[in-house]
Length: 61
Image (cartoon, rainbow, N blue to C red):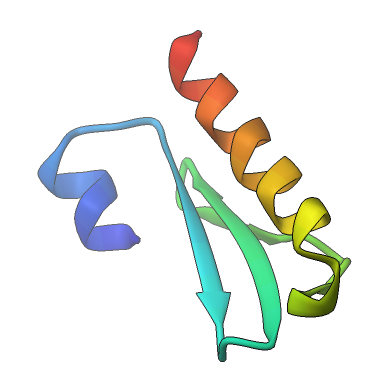
């Protein structure tokens, strides 16, 4: 995420970490890493898709 932030000269970068079952969402903004306190599980894929949709909406701004 840091390399993406620097390479593309962005203010913030979103990230996703998953083992295929549990999904975590991150935000790196101004060298501060924020981790969403909720874990999302593949058994509730609608929550994962919703979260990815939220990130996609941020790119429209």
